[in-house]
Length: 293
View 1 (cartoon, rainbow, N blue to C red):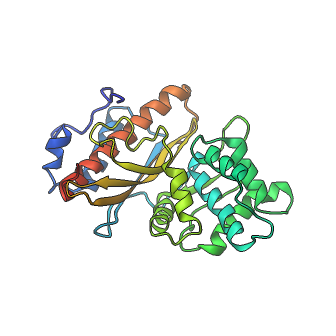
View 2 (cartoon, rainbow, N blue to C red; view 1 turned 45 degrees about the horizontal axis):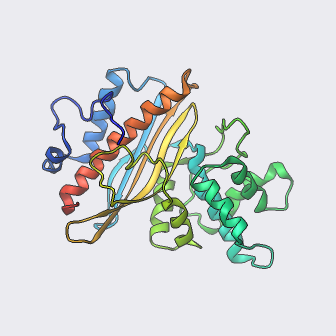
């Protein structure tokens, strides 16, 4: 498991272990996250040109636990890719004459979602429309907003993924991701089970991988996004209780930088660890609520 020793797990005066935090359930989770991020800013770990967004929704109690900058628009990086997959599935559902889900297409979907392959992503952007090539990214957005306007309210899709991976023009809000994940979990979107399967394929997520408090039995359906200006993850965590029941919740964490980081790898690792720390805080809260494993 990845060590997060370079970051303070929680701020001064708060509890510092997962088991201790689990017992501190009367402390408001959103306030703790805000305090934690403010502390990182004071220490210079998160810079003045960086903004963050956080969202957590408890499916069991149908309760929003965290809503920090949820409605603000952020660059999406590769977190936009499940949206692109959904646009293709809308076409597949409504035009079976011209769209198929063959083994070849399935493999391309896995490449796009599991391995974040940019060529596969551009293949699906091109596939959803016969309009001129440069108009097809906006066609993806139009398809999503036509079929699910209540979900994709702040989503903007304006570009293919460039060869250098520096995708800065596509954007969405944490609330859009939250609404998408809610609809996905309740299978109100076409091919929801296949999208969940794709997002559930093992990858280096920032929600459970490297987060010691999250046990291996926990299922995560997620998509990360990383550029020199964006580090994020959005997903559904299917936590397991000691009673054997599932206790799912959503987690979205986004950190966006106004200017490109000079050391991309170092910045991405550092901000990824911030997201992991917050994910650990959230899991500890859920563990207290439901006596999770």
